Length: 84
Image 1 (tube, rainbow, N blue to C red):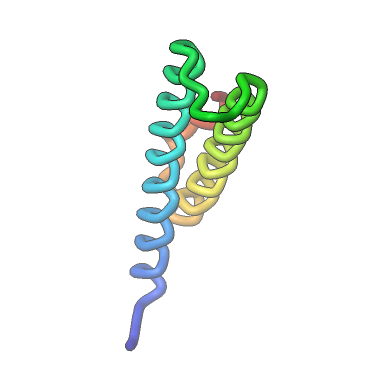
Image 2 (tube, rainbow, N blue to C red):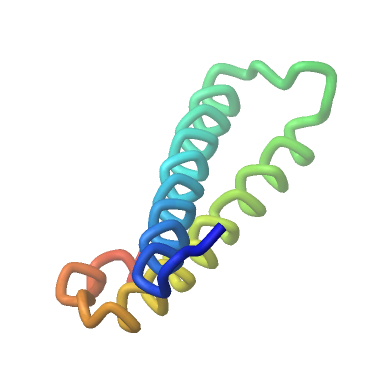
């Protein structure tokens, strides 16, 4: 299967943005569960650790997406994401 460099870059960008969206969903869910005291068999501390880990993961994926888009020369809208 032949794939162009442009297609690879587009797929990488799509994958990064999909992971960013999933991290945001997980952060929102964990935040709500912590606020409501829904710990699901783990401690509050463990839930907070999971949230912090997800927030770090979000920052990492934002940076990866930034690098991919920088390679595409499309970084104007990333200034806000990298400061989260």
